[in-house]
Length: 381
Figure (cartoon, rainbow, N blue to C red):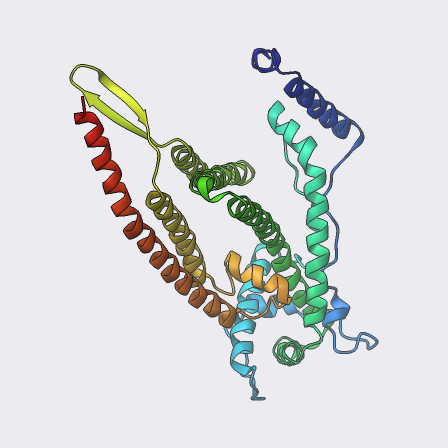
């Protein structure tokens, strides 16, 4: 623990913080036992048209779906017919995959994932953050459950349920399948919902810090905010790589970290004949900071557009899951909402590009004047 001694030798506040942090982690690991929240998002009774009636328990649904390669035609034409056809085909494909993996997956309880903590740092992070993360997940699950319950009262869902039972049979097994389909998608959407809330808070904090800056120091404040954003992105990717064990996320964390460090302390490398290799800290102009913001927004916009273009009902993208979390509709692909977001992203990119062009053209004459003044000072005796 030599590094702890070096850091805390002349800093009592840091030493007290480390002692408090380790003490809290020990107490939480000793007294607490974090576990995944058990929230029933969608129940079987919610899917049945009349929960008081008695329905057949099992009429060979697993075998019928496993051997099926298409759906029966929906004879009742309505405004939801085409959307229901896509949704039913996606649900059938998902159910077929699940039944082929495990014929009794509908009645098998999902075991809580077992994680072996092999390092002291991993155990420390688990003791500190497992319980708060499970509390947040439970709150998000309750929110999504309420949204799904509201969606079940809409005409769109009632029309889908009618077509669904016409295709899969009106029985408790098919109702359980529909409930499981929505519940599984909702659980995947919880991580997306919590991530969106995290980045929304980060955006609000960054915007407040940038807007509260005085005009004379606003450029430097904008530079720091952008640098902290990239560093925060690196920390997020690092945590994701740790939890998901993906090398691509680790590489992304490394790249984002270096981008954030460079934006905070831009450095130029000079190679001279006499002095050799030297480093010089740069002071970026307003136009360069604006260009950095434009590049950052462009990369985010590319990510959003990639999600919109590649997401499907069977493999929904994070944007679709986020929209479904607020609407409670995990049956249809939110094409209209994604189209609106796509148009808004394009308009915002054009507006930001015009703003950057204005900053570059306004700042260019000022930069030329500063260079001329610097040359006069060098010539003067």
